[in-house]
Length: 84
Image (cartoon, rainbow, N blue to C red; front, side):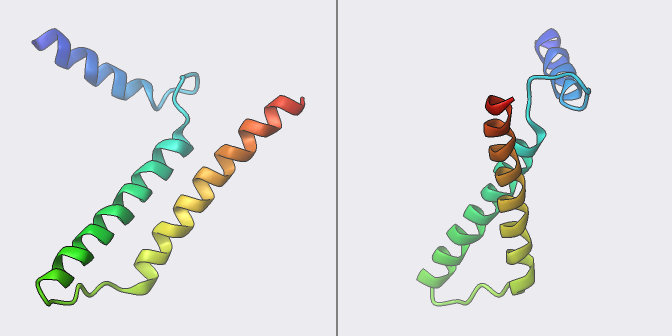
């Protein structure tokens, strides 16, 4: 069990190396999308119980911009590599 945990910690550290198989932009885009989904779910649940979920609009818009930016750049890079 300890070896499994050590391997997972080492795998997490490998994300931050210059040469890796993980696209960091996709990770950030997925995390921002997950936060938006959690917000939407919480909004639906609180609306079902008759309460308003109050969140500043600029916070939600920030996650939208991060999501579009990171996944958009990752998508452009994917197609730009084919043209080289």
